[in-house]
Amino acid sequence: MNFEQFLMTEYQLGESSAKDYVGQLDGILKKGIYNGENSMTPSIEAAIEEEYPNSKNHYKLILNRYFAFRDMIMNG
Image 1 (tube, rainbow, N blue to C red):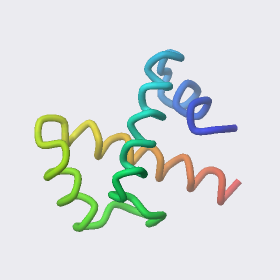
Image 2: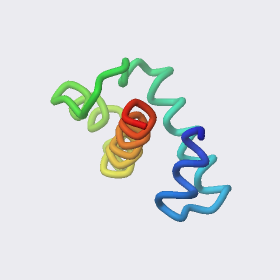
Image 3: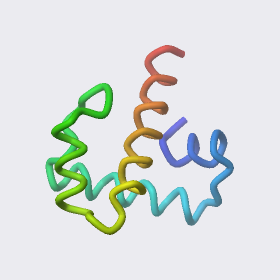
Image 4: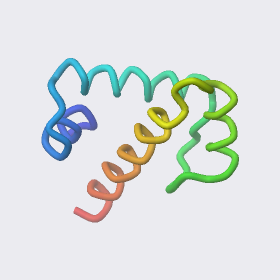
């Protein structure tokens, strides 16, 4: 299962919304905000708030859902 499928299954997101989440996660990765940490850190939160001040909660939600996805994959 990939992140998009996880979002559609666990959070009942439509395909378009799930693809948006994946694209936004890619943006977080490309900007170097997230670098493989296992959970939200103060430095990640600060970087999100600086980069995305008007939608910081949405981007934090994306990462928290990605952490849940990673936990599911790692823990079977």
